[in-house]
Length: 563
Ligand code: SF4
Ligand code: SF4
Image 1 (cartoon, rainbow, N blue to C red):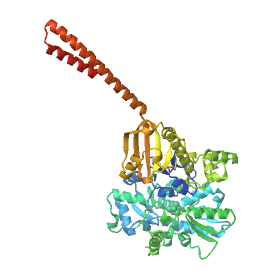
Image 2 (image 1 turned 30 degrees about the vertical axis):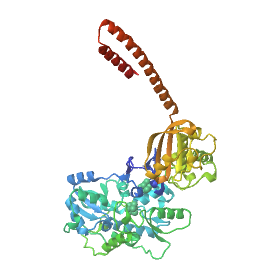
Image 3 (image 1 turned 180 degrees about the vertical axis):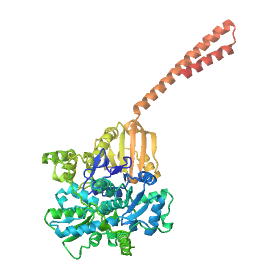
């Protein structure tokens, strides 16, 4: 399962994540972004940059709450914590204990072990040694630069080393890592970490838990870490921090590099593969500036302020350790795999075919606008072939298609549609408008509206900023009776008129009305005649004339109503 989940209703197919994911691990399926777990390195960048906040990481707070209720749990807190929490280390420890943690230690205890190992490894290492503390770097190499897996330090990360140390020192203990990193949440399931770390959450998760439990950690008194770590191992989360902790001289050197940020890591690995550089050691971190800029820290502070906090804390005097990490033996080795999935490569003909499906028949048609999230139309066509992208992601093509669709609808309308600008110059004059009002069959676009019809309603609609709805109007010069709706589009400085020819209907109505009048007149004559006869008969029968008259008037009324 992918670590990152997406809320479909929030994803508005803006392709921002497609554009910004350097390893192209985002696939678009039915207009919705999906993380391709086989390619994703869990750097978390797509979560941070999504303008709709459509992506999130499954958090484990309910698991943590259960664990705290049922087990003895130690928190291993990543050394970047001073960059994330506005409180003293002692207050943070107190807050964690209030949540139910049995003890709190710094992950940098594990960093001490790993830093020492880097220093030793470097002595006899023949090729470039790449630090393996950052799980996103490990995934980047395994999934995208597997030629370099043998360059990765064959050592576990400080997080796993610390958890192993804890479990060696204390029996029946659960370890929860709390840090700035979402890749660590995945790392705890790796074979090399199995049964060391029981749960990993981010600093932001922890802040949420504090507020959920109503704990204001900033107002608490101080408590202490169970054991303190060495000073410079606390500098692991900043650039050059690993080098400093491992006591590796990183002065002005081309042999010892500190690389942070995904793009920089990728360029450096490519340079190694191309033989451009051959450093002895690379301290590599996927987050620009190091873990202090991890996706699990929401902070307004600049990278430099965060760095300053971490370094100031690292410089603080350490309390005497109650145990020596060197005396506890743990297995810190690990291996790596080539986890690259080979993408299907299309032939030139297949690429051309896909390009042609979005109206790109020649090089000039390829705009390379980047709207789809790919750098070029060709790159996007390859992604379509590989099932990562969809044809309809081409915005210029879809726009053109929508425009021509709109044109088809307007042209095939049974109503005359006339669009003018605010100066009453015709912008659109559809076929029905030509049929009704353009007897000379000239090109109406560009001419003034009065050349064809009275522009009064258009002017009224524009100046009053109000639509006119289904107004009956007679165009005598064309022998037409029409119903006219006029809509001003203020933002576009246009006025649209939709005119329905109702001449036939109105003429029919007039004919029927005339027929009614004639019939009524005829009926009146008949009644009149009948009345006379009836009066005569009534006279003969002795009934009153008034009574007969009333009956006959009633009869006429009924007949009128009928008609
Ligand atoms: S987490 Fe990173 S690698 Fe994975 S999809 Fe998002 S941006 Fe790409
Ligand atoms: S640099 Fe640090 S926070 Fe960022 S992905 Fe790597 S380990 Fe995680």
